[in-house]
Length: 336
Ligand SMILES: NC(=O)c1ccc[n+]([C@@H]2O[C@H](COP(=O)([O-])OP(=O)(O)OC[C@H]3O[C@@H](n4cnc5c(N)ncnc54)[C@H](OP(=O)(O)O)[C@@H]3O)[C@@H](O)[C@H]2O)c1
Image 1 (cartoon, protein in one colour):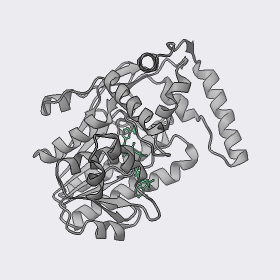
Image 2 (image 1 turned 135 degrees about the vertical axis):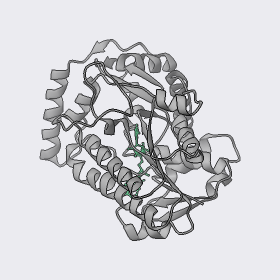
Image 3 (image 1 turned 30 degrees about the vertical axis):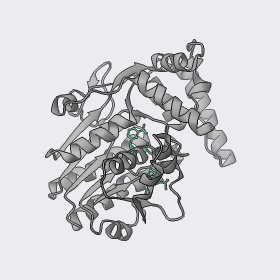
């Protein structure tokens, strides 16, 4: 029996689909009062007949901040995939992010140890690898550096990953994946892939930033392969391509039949706009549309290497052009 946390999110939905498709018996943690609409949508996006597949998922009420609910959820479970997290670049959500991503992960690790779980797969992030020196390729050996420019999200993911390493020290079999920006047609309202929904509006603009991108289907397949292997106590960067924002938007523009990005955005000006928007958010108690953390992320030039994963497991990552085309196809279908 497998338990998945974060099953209503982007990664969790695709993972549940892939696990049930392969015939695994799966439980998924569902926060009280929530409904798995997003997951159902993802299942429905694939070929017909999958309506019954989602009914094979046993939804169990729980919250990663509630250790009792985790212990209950892990009854009869052998393997755990921990995908639940809060992703935000809004400094006002830092407290919640630290709670869910660090304390929540510690609770998952403790529950795994207490319930004799055979193996845990933890979804970390490239954010927990820290920032690169100019032009340097980042891989699993990167060392975290304390810096004023680390985002709250990065700090929380680094803290969460440390909890998994602590669990490994205490005897837990665990494997960690560090995906780059995950591209997939998710619909979760809090996900970073909200940006993805807005790609169509942002296409005329670009910044000088470079980042890594990976297909959500590659992420879940990599997780399953690692769980089915004897590999433990290791982390793996999952990344298909490093692209400038201009290259990324150009690919999207070609798929959507739109003009290529042509307006370069200046980092200082964007930073000022973000600062003003954060002030507006504070004064009006609303969520800022742009934060200085967003701007830092959009201006940074970060290159990632997934060579360790490629050489450990024979794996070919989907080109970003193909995964964007598939994501747009699904999003288009969902609009109907
Ligand atoms: N998206 C990316 O580009 C990206 C890149 C690298 C790494 N990651 C990592 O990949 C993992 C999955 O990300 P995602 O994109 O799938 O995120 P997502 O779509 O935002 O989904 C987050 C999931 O976490 C759940 N969750 C939040 N707080 C929780 C709590 N207190 N207890 C239980 N569940 C809770 C949410 O449940 P509700 O529906 O109840 O809110 C949702 O199912 C995360 O660890 C993230 O840090 C994501």
